[in-house]
Structures are given as C-alpha cells and as structure tokens.
Length: 468
Ligand SMILES: [Zn+2]
Image (cartoon, rainbow, N blue to C red; front, side, top):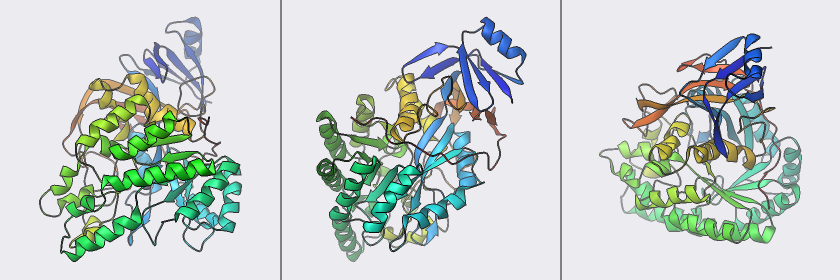
C-alpha cells in the first residue's frame, strides 16, 4: 500500500482552515497532523511519496453532481465520453461526478441504468455515481425506483420541460414524488414550463425569427419561476424532498427562498455559466450565439447578482456544471436556420472549481464556503459524505492541491474537454488546480494527467443527508 504525506499546506474544510499535514495510506486519509509533529515525521519515514504543499490550499476533491457524458440530444451525442469527461474533470479538481442515466418512454428504468453503467465501466478517471432520469412514470417504473434506491441510485430527475421527449405531467410528477416520500429518494427537477415555451417557440419560428438569440427570448425567466413554484407545491403535497437543478432566475430563487424559510426540504443548485455569463452572449454576430445555447438559458445580467446572493445565503446550496458539451462545428451547427434545433448544453466540468474560486478572490464568498459549495454540500446532498467532500480520517483520499495565487487564461486551446470552444474563452482567473489525488492515487501532477482510465469506480450512494 502506498503512503503519501502532503505537507506544509493549509487544509480547508467547510467549517475552517488549519495548517496541517495530511497523511494518506492506500485509498484513505488516515490522519491530519500538526506540521513537524512526531506522528507526521514518523509517518513520513515510511512514506512512498511526499507532496510539498507549502503556500498551497489543500482541499477535498470537488463533486460535480450534474454532468451529461455521451448524452443523446436532438440526433447527436454530447461530445465528452466518460473517458474524456472524467479526465477533464480531474484536471479541473473534480474527483467525483454524478451523471444521469435516462429511462426512455416505454422502457424500464433498469434498461437505461444498465446502458449507462456499461458506458462508464472501465472508462472513468475518477469516481462516479448516477442519478436516474424518469421519463415514463407508471406502476412499474415507480416500483423500480425503490429497487434502485437500494442499489445506490437515490435521486430521480423529472422534467417539466421538453414535451414529447423527457416531459412529465404534473400528475406523473406527483406520483414520483409520492414514491420518493416513501423510499427516501430526492426528486430533482428541471423546472421550466415546457408546454408554454413550446407555444412561444412555434410562434417565434413562424415569424421567421430563427437566430440563436431567440432561444433565450422564448424561454422567459417567469416560466422558470412558475415551474419552480409549482414543483415546490407538488413536493409539499407529496411530502418528498426536492432539489431544483440549474436554477438561473431571480423568480425561481424567490420561490426556493420562500420554501426554505418555511422549513421545507427544498434545495437548489446553480451553475458557473449562470453566475458568470449573461444572455448578451447569445447576441454575438452570425451563428456564434449557438455556443451559449443551454436550457434554462443564460439570463439578463441583473440575475447574476441575485444568484451570487443566493450562494451566500445558502438558498443556493450547490454549484454543479450541467456539463453537456456539443462542438460548435457540426453539432451546434445542426441548428443553423432554426434555433430550436441547436443541441442544448455547455461545456464546463473542467472549469467549475477554479471559476467559483473567483468568488473568493472577489470577496463574494469565503474560502470555506467555496469548499462547501463545490465539495462538501454536494457530498451530503447525494449521500456520499463523509466518504467524499471532506479531508478527514477515514475519508477517501480525494484531494486537490490548489495554488491560490497562480494566474491563468481559460481557452479551448489549452482545456482538456473534448469540445472545440470554451464559453469562458479569454477569461483570466486567479488560482489553479495543481495536483489531484483520487482515492490515494495521484491523477494530476503539476498540471499533467498521470491517472488512468478505469481507475474511477461506481459509487453506491445513501440518501440525502440534509432532510429535516
Ligand atoms: Zn442537465
């Protein structure tokens, strides 16, 4: 078994920062020791590796609980495979992803789950779990939810958007929530009123308005606010926990704040693109706005400040990426002449940890809050804590050595995601992931990938650890 000492750094957790050496034995963290203490020195004697973390932050590996590798959408597939996507995640300081298996209409949950497990198996550079997208709520799939919870798939996503594809009616959503209220699962919701949106999209296309910018204009924030409110009320009636995915809008945040103030088990995540980019990006000349097409869409700039406030107040508890990359060439281009055919999704799994750190640089959030929203809370929300999300004895040695003072410029020419553009192209940021351990194995060393395909294992998760 390999023993590694990470010495001289500042270990950051969600509750505080301390100068400590981290002792790793095999796949686990065995102790945090005072620098130079007897235990640290004696452990170091038998160690096979020593990482000098002087001047560095030592933080738990990030958990990105919302990714879509190799996901079918509109006749194509998201361009990162589990192999390329988890490698890029590692480069960006993320050592756990939770991706989504999809049940198609007429299929069993099991078919969708087994299909995705087969795609991920043997290909991942870091550990992975799965949520299950339920798109056909019926007696059989409701029963299957209970079985999946026992197998470590403890969260189920439903869609109020995409009629005819992934959409569920309010009645179907209520039934799934009632099932979750009994089996302990968390219901994840894509909250946009897809029925109303489809009407606006059809009217817009009929007027000959086909450019990418109309993607955002046909999905108004009011319809995210409405759907979020409706999801909260349905969950209240059913008595189930609810997790709003990729919240983008002030109206939706207001609904979440109200529910949380009322003491309900309602949680929400946002994503870096909604914290850093506005709908102005969709106005770029020619077809370039297509690079920024995702759903819900990027919002007018005033929403960004509201989301940062939500992150401070913990009304937004998690930052995930909704990583769902499509190349500009040949994939985004499927929507030339009809914005509704542009594949929805943006790349980001590699950028999340470093981007949210800009909140620390700007004084928006503390370094501890940064660790909380990128690692600790996602681990607790999806039943992986304290195995993941914290540097503590007994936890998996998923560790990031972070250089807080480094400067870098984000670019598609240097990123590792399998996609031909970056939505953050040219953005200069402070801080950089330097070295990354996944279950005790060094997977990124001084910016070089030294991990291996197949190292990542499937994680069976317990249920949400925040329920009140
Ligand atoms: Zn998504």
